[in-house]
Length: 182
Image 1 (cartoon, one colour):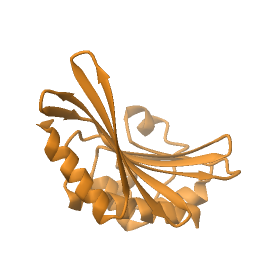
Image 2 (cartoon, rainbow, N blue to C red; image 1 turned 90 degrees about the vertical axis):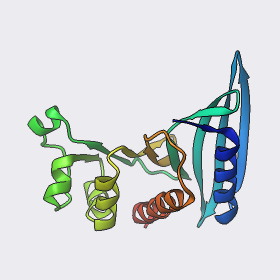
Image 3 (cartoon, rainbow, N blue to C red; image 1 turned 90 degrees about the horizontal axis):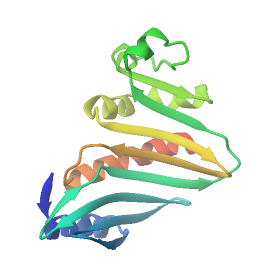
């Protein structure tokens, strides 16, 4: 989606200000265009949540990347949780998928985790199920590596998100983070 560069930066600046976040836009010049990376950092409990989106600028318009919300936490955990839309092979080989208890949700998504109880605790929640059912372009994963755990949700729709949409995704992300870190 192409939009006006100033519209993009103003929208994200407004969101950052209203969430008391710290907004940074990093500009990286290239031949004929420029890539700008936006990061809004919000302190949440003992963690930082980062909201990221990039834009490739040509003249006064930009092409946007997907919106990513992520949280890092240092710990000794070895946690892995992945949710994907269910595909042909998942339907044939569904033995490792974790059931949420909602047949509609379980038919559409495959949940894989090395902590089945925690994954069930997160995805049994109706509001989490609704988030994914209403937003089929969401990607979610939790990955631990070298003492750090990354919790990440990405909406693959390449668009300018309204402040209300970003706040909604942020609040739902916080809810999921709370479930994981409880």
